[in-house]
Image (cartoon, rainbow, N blue to C red; front, top):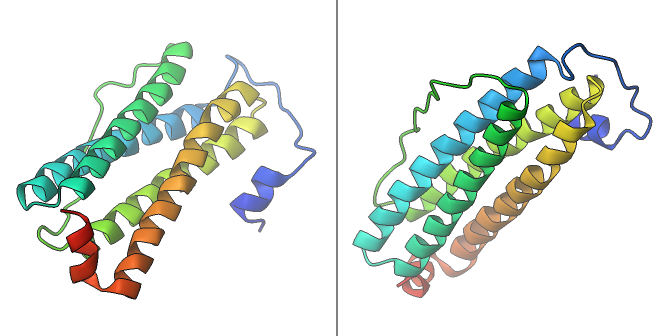
Length: 174
């Protein structure tokens, strides 16, 4: 079985004619993406408040910006669903539980979340292309780029913590 990355990078993808422009599997994946991005928006916004409350204002501000980005990603996915005239309500968001007062655990938690978002975005791109829906694939490429950037950022933070220690890392976040 080919990996998802191999499928995305495959040059000669055969387009398939699909009634109503896209496939139900594409719609289901886009709905899943909406929910993941709303979930991340909620998680990051809560973490931002928590971190600022404990005096880590720089990290709190950064997570607040990440929450805004996730909100924009959710809106992009919802716009695509509106294009298909698909009802995506009710939006079911069940934020995962993150560990308070443990910045390293929070960063690891967010890394898992952004990896999940990236995986879903890759799946949307692959399934949309296999259905002949290049517009949806193109819509999700910037979202995937954002997830890849987020993965790099959270991994960078974890390397900093490993290299300098959590106390020194947190000192920089005040």
